[in-house]
Amino acid sequence: MDYTAPKNIDENLRLLLESRGREDGPRVERFEVDTQVFWIKRVEQLKLRYRLQKGDPRKAFERERLAYHEMNAVQAPVPQLVAEGQDFLVLPDCGRDLRELMKHDADTARRDQMLLDASVMLATFHGLGFAHGRPSPKDMCQVGGQMLLLDFERYTPQNNTPMGQARDLVVFAFNVAAHSPKMRGTLPEAMRAYRGKGDEAIWPLAQRWCRWFRWADWVTKPLQSRPEGRSKEFKAIPVVLDLFLSEDKPLV
Image (tube, rainbow, N blue to C red; front, side, top):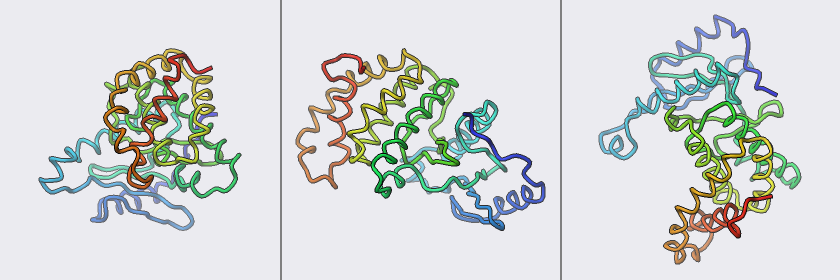
């Protein structure tokens, strides 16, 4: 089922959102109109030091705007851009992100199903020819029972390739393993769900990508033994490598 974008946004509402977006405000602002909630994203204002560290925020903003235009045009599973200006974007509220939902939902079956739905959604997104760049459960949400993907500041059309999509899949699994550790046991099933929906060529490419990074497991072994809170990303490395490379055979 394709994401059903908000239709027939009232012109007065659109003008109000555009007016608010042009005002000075935080980089990300929650804005409520009657019973509707929207999020305004403005170009980040950085001092030189942080520009050198994080890159040009204007380019990141333009990458995200390009992404929403391209993806909305083909009804990809992403939110509908409802208003925009030279320095801002306005998106509808999509509720809590998937990482929060999986963290706080006490129903194991429901948590597992959310991860499976997210994996299928990522496969659908890839099937439309796109790659996200750094997909994570914190960049996914559930609206009306459907998963949507958010945050495209790292989007670039040059990554819309099978290898870019394979990297997406590995990064997604890594973010689940690192930041939602109680979901690690569901990751094999989530990968099967992705493969059942996605291009058969992606899995071997993801395995190749993991082979290139086997060294990361070797060099971080001392750090993996530290307490969970201080080494969650290091501890996720062997989990993900085993997920993709166990006995170096395809997951079936």
